[in-house]
Amino acid sequence: MADGTSIGMTERTTGHNYPRVDVLNVYVHDISMDDLVENFTEGAVLTLHVDMIMKLQKDRAFLEIFDKFDVITCDSQILYFATKFLGTPVCERVSGSDYFPKFYMHHKDNPDVTVFLCGGKPGIADIAAERINAKTGRQFVVGTDAPPFDYDNDPAEIDRMIERINASGATVLLVGLGGGRQEKFIMKYRERMPNIRLFLPLGGTIDYEAGTFQRPPAWITEWGFEWLYRLVKEPRQRWHRYVVHEPPVLWALLKQKLGIYRDPFGGK
Image 1 (tube, one colour):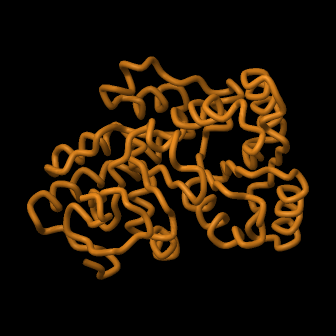
Image 2: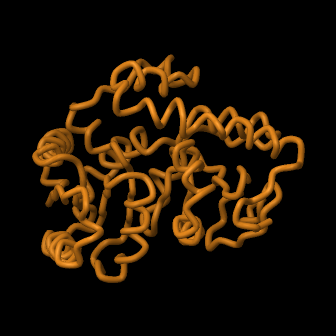
């Protein structure tokens, strides 16, 4: 499968050499954490999880940019189990919140790699930057921004965000603006950020790095119960996502296993 062909039923083409594993109307690449950290230094990464898969069943605009990402990783233990259930397992789960600390420690002595953190509530990215810079021993994070929630409805705000990113001189952009929205921001405006070589839409990673939200013990994640941990910790914020929005994925995966799943947008 080294020629980049797909494992499964879809036939979308991509511009890289990682094998594909199809999941519903999208796919993940069979790539290890070490491979991603050490060898992928330019392009755009998407870390796919269950919430995102459900959005991709309904959001055509999101689906239309999906193939523009160079690497799509399996960012969910549930999704990892799903690839096994479907008979096409990936080698491991590669989550954004696990990947980013490995990334910055791998590049801590590489002066050509600097990061801009875009997202989070006011002040959170600054805390994350301070902690990351302390760990790396240099100014690894060279800029931060906390755009308002409705940033994407204000062209002037978009201009301000891009100007700030460009002025920082960063070569890596980590965006935490919400699943679907952050990916659309990257693909719509990446050409206006010529200094950025690596685009990382990594959701809540800024909060994790700032220490404002703690990761569960490793065994909880490995057994696929991180969703329950988050639901208990933040019931109001997480209830709709974990109780209403995501469970239908189980029925969709069963339909794929039985060969009766159909892409809601009419694709293969």
